[in-house]
Length: 439
Image (cartoon, rainbow, N blue to C red; front, side, top):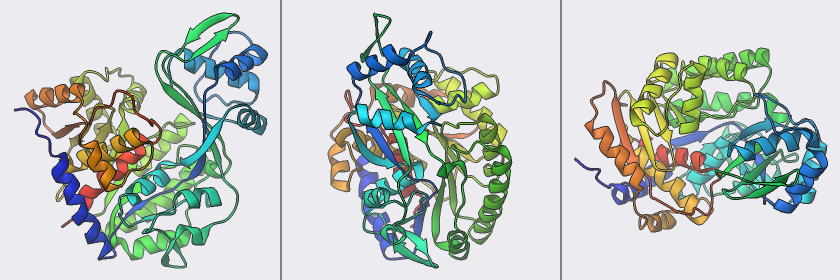
């Protein structure tokens, strides 16, 4: 049996989902971090100048390495570009940030999984609650959507009512396939499009969630449709991590006790410290229903268990998901890729998982197509795109397999040349939330 396209049907259901929330106090919640992303435009001339001036020896990079000078920037970024890799690294020297901003063209964009997910969902007209850490004018302006509120003094208020302080900058250094650079007169090309996220960020070395926000969530737990968690990946202190996760764990337990139907969704990310990642996952998996990730993060998780998987082989992908579910005991995993999205795990009562994957694909695909968070009309335009041939092959393969757990797979809408590649995973998570609105 071949895949049946239900994109148009589920998109029209969104209208009712939005009305249900507008006419009640039921809300999706996105947490915890936000920042002002600085999107640099790659310049071969400027990057060559950096390499000529600052590169010492061969390009190289070590796990958890910090960029503490232009020399380390040149060495590490050249290594990632040579191999078409992407990732995230800490910057400890603000001079590096100042250099990049003064030598490369750039624009500001919203950063943080929770913040981007909230903005993407709000762009469809869905009312919701967001918690943000960077409350600067830039961030609050980028999140200024009708119906997107936060909590202040025990009540829902627009984000501009909590505006204060300066922005946290995360510099996004992107490169596309074929971008050229030179080392010692030798020309090289980037083999695969990717990006490095460079954080000069002291705020997110700790996650302090306002007590008033936690109290509101606990008291109003029955109105919480889903609680989306992310933003722990910049912490590097293990003892601090233990302390914060214990505090938040007690909070999550109270929300769960007051509303067992609330879906806890945890989106994976690149962690600056593997030790911190281990602590976060150990604690948070006690409360999480669904763990979300892309295929690269799936490979990274299995590698931590000394298992190598081929992300292009469906049986290997499922084997990797089994390993993660067995380790963390979550109900299920949602994996999103450019060609398809897939859920694997237990069946969730009252949740249409095919709808979740479909709308996740549609919102992220629309952002890729138009370059910003899409409204419903722009999502309807995306339906004209064909389904991914690779995604269709995976869907057919899945239907032939006999599995112990439930599995759903939805091909994405295919684009040869997307306008935007930033924040697609976060936008995907936003679309998934519509499936959690119970009729």
